[in-house]
Picture 1 (cartoon, rainbow, N blue to C red):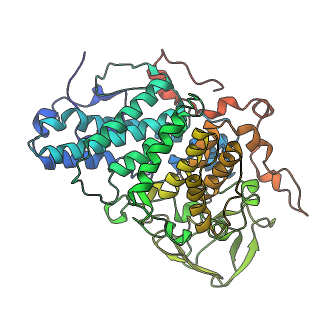
Picture 2 (picture 1 turned 135 degrees about the vertical axis):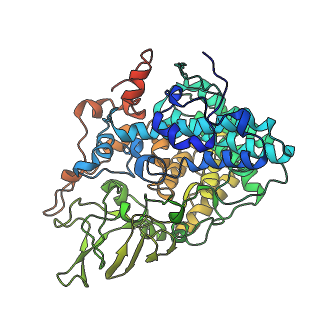
Length: 526
């Protein structure tokens, strides 16, 4: 049976609960495209649903967005019993039965179905071409982004360009086909955005589409496609964004993480506590378990960097604003505190933490996530209004720098200028001149690691495309320092995965999806 209706945005919650392969459970007597897509306000609502599905705990509102990326060195999983998913990926042994793996899969396919809803129906709406095209362009962008996240996390995945047939069991498309679809969607989005389209917070636009396209091209140069011809395309597309002058770096790195919609925010996911969509991946989520506020609130201890990643960080202002290294222990009076270094045997995890994710919206030390002084913690909150910047301007600069060097076989003057803008803001000197293309690329990759440390798996996807796991594993801290056995707090990697970690570049397909699709084969190693 090939049904030809699409689930309207009001059914978002039901769509998530039923999952992408169970659409037959939604009654056909509900709202359909025929009865719903009449006005521009209907279309606006459907587009809003595309964005809204990512502003939840099971998606980008909490740590579900990063569980598949914990094999990276900028993310480590705690040892608490409720931290199993993060820890399993940290051990390069992700569990296909994990609810977080399923959440990650479902969130993006929910978004794809919502985008398809718009793409198939936008032309029938009674509105101007510019308004309709602007709506469709956003849907094409969001569908491309969802597939981009899926293919990098899970490898071959089903391409569902519009069918909502509940009985369809689509085959997993090859990665090359998925990337071709992503590129096509982004090119379509760029062509559809009208010149009059108003850029607004949280909304995709022509520049976010070009930023994403440049990043996609750069990823295509590495594993699994290894298409070096895309360096030219990546450099040219990123340069269009740079030359537009639409974005500039925020002077102070710390304020990027305490403010929304800054001059370097190219596309973000918006959150609003009062509307029930709070950002819960900052604030308590990134605060040590030992820290307790004067109001009784305490940290959740959900993620932090690996010890070696912190130790290898460049000594600069950006690192000072990124990492949190002195844990505030509350005294018995519950008002005063004493500071303990992160490696003290009185701490639970023996790790540094991320400072930049503590505060939420406000100013460092006084945000809606954490309010504190140098020697006390007033309060901590699990819910903040901080938007999640999916794309920041440094991504464009560093993508351009790397791609331009690899495309020409040597670093370019403009490539040096691009990376040096990022380094200058970080408090670092200009990059050493005269590097080879490979040396320059490695410097850019390292710069990207610390500029985007802990942010949405950006570091992990560099590790994947460049196949860096052997180096990352070898660099894990295995030393002793005084009485402190740091290595005992790193999650152990099984010997067979140390010898060959190649399976870990892809996450396992969720077990429930494998059961629904008996013709699929699980990713190797799971």
